[in-house]
Length: 253
Image 1 (tube, rainbow, N blue to C red):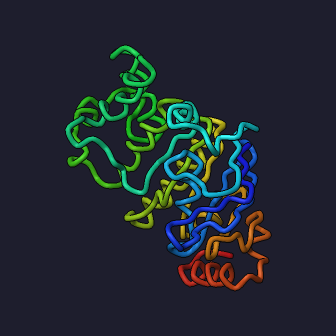
Image 2 (cartoon, rainbow, N blue to C red):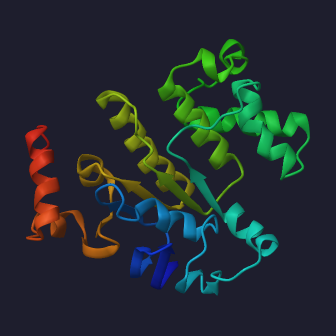
């Protein structure tokens, strides 16, 4: 379980998060929606200690992690795998080496063990068949599509076995077909690996398809939250606007 209690985050005179209180149950897929600059990504970054809250509490499985030192935060980050907006792969490493890197550096696996685990994870994100594609494994990130780079980034994240998966705008820059594929991949991996998933997005289409719960932020505050059915029945103006945009794109609401 993840709990945010009265969370406040400021940047100078600007308060980005204004007392956010939110509980996310184990195994839930929660989408956090909102327009740009409403604090969605900031909320994720406070969870893994990349940003520190100015007030309030953050608990993971009952443990208060709000004020942990940088060193004490390392085990928390290993439990929370974060997939950033951009793939952020090592350009000088092959696809296989990118996925195996964390396993060798942090998990202390041998090259053989790390390679086997990396292949399993590449297969889980749909990049390898049942047998290794040695040609693909040896490609550099610049030699594969942006959508494939996103999948490699996800494979690298799940390789170390996190209990929580955090996605910061995971479908940015992708075409509609690849966007749908990535969304269903997030859902399927979360169910298969039995992880909690928090997805920051501005895309109501994606949320309606795979979320257990949708949370809508506006100006640093939660203005609505609920199941897909409850969100569809919402009368909050921002939510209505999101739904109208989705409907205009042909999404059934």
